[in-house]
Image (cartoon, rainbow, N blue to C red; front, side):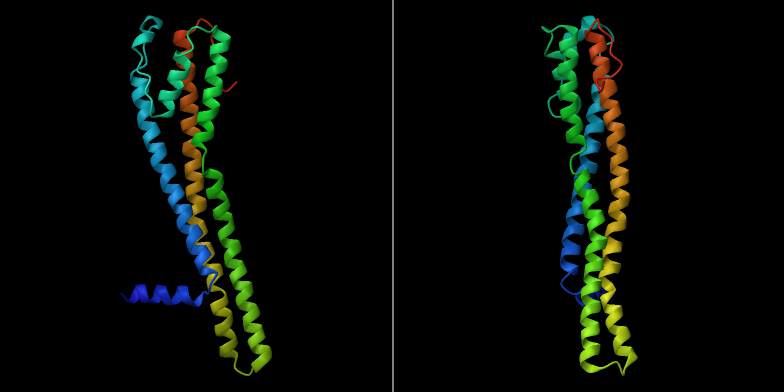
Length: 208
């Protein structure tokens, strides 16, 4: 209880800038959570799709093209264009892959922007606090150094808050970006393998 009261006092001393710092921080963390859960689901679905990959082209009709995941949509895109020649089928698969890649990278840019914005909001709060402190000094004089020190200390709270909020987001953004890259490569390998199974034309990667 004492910790909560101390935290509330610290927050209130920071002034109005603490509210946008809090809001952006919560929003950024919620995006991180959403992306993490999304990648968990996609990894699980992709593992299941790999397990259902046919070993022979003659088993193409038995391939389980799911509907609720990137792997399912990519397999469906590759398998539903059987009437096309190999080159056109690869192009269709490449287009579908690019759409899924954009979905995988969704929100990562926003998380990065929020992580960069939070320290600047903290600095803005500090500048506002310093201006208020110096205005008070100009109005009442600087005879009491403690008053000046207290004013500067309060002004620095927003910088502290901005850094505390941004550091975890920077770390999570890097972690999620790495997961997105790995998932993208695995989906590329998966889609390429489907095309190999159902096509006479070989392609190294649907990214190319």
